[in-house]
Image (tube, rainbow, N blue to C red):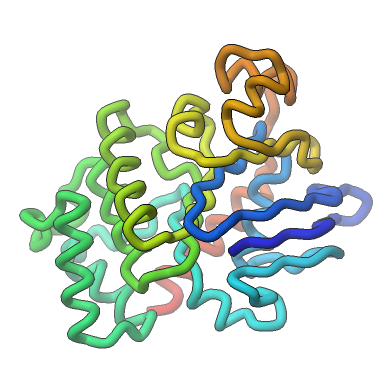
Length: 264
């Protein structure tokens, strides 16, 4: 479903992503892990049509996202780290706007909205303004909205950041249900290693722009001789604290605004 070959992205003399290759199969949950500034955000931006690669090849469901940009965008959903809901609208209205933007037919849209709001335990609150929701409820709504147009791939950029353990567990249970029922490929980033260990079928670890490990969580632990995925991650990437690139974060925020509010 996702095919990446020898992907490179350079900014002048600096190479942010350096000869990265990986595959993600249909219906797989793939966790893309790395320290701040390792190249995760740049890779996601290339996968989701925000950045053009310096070299290399990308396929999303058989499409090159650079030459078939609009068609590729129809094939995936994305939930950004930064909030993208309209707090003055109700949960139902936020879903409705998204469905209209993606040209989901009216009857199908209404049925799908009801199914997803019930699955993500938001149906009883559908008529309330989103600004009254808790952080966990907002994230559940964003992810439910991401599934609305029945994407082949869903990109989740640190979707549980700042949530309490109960909310994180509940959210992933819902995502796994849709993943299993609809065979949606899920590509996620997270800094919660226990989360990646529990949820992901396979993991890729990127550091200094290079992919340093791929495999199941168990394979990566065995490769490093670690007892936990966190220990394996530190063995692969070191213990030095990294600073995230401000420009990368700003570009993702800019894309989030374009993708949601800017398309209304």
